[in-house]
Image (cartoon, rainbow, N blue to C red; front, side, top):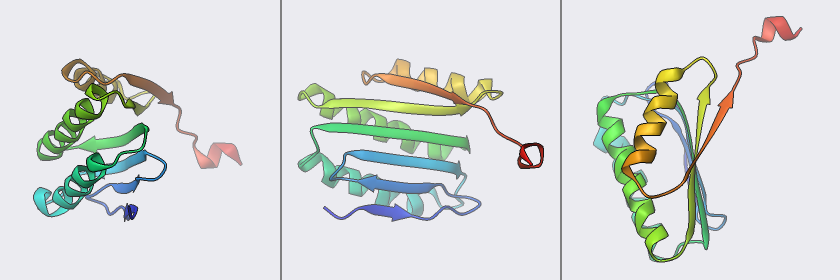
Length: 133
């Protein structure tokens, strides 16, 4: 299965889904003007992946902001992960959030409550480049 690779834009996240390794990554901002135009190819790729998944699937979600239309599509993807878990696949979500972003942490907690897939929460600290010099 070909990898799905979409470069980030100011309105859409970086997407890298690797069917061979079972690692899926979503990173950045998701506020597309046309949410279906962006998310349908992503969700369709994942539907195809479900037909012949890796024995282990990890979805890494590292979003700094997303709107309600993106939220619905992310939830749809997470519900699809339930299907993998129900047939015995090893599945989990890594939810990355900025140490100071309590809202994004809480959104991840809400998603974790809505699906049966385990979540691993990973907090990170932004390093100011000017301070690192």
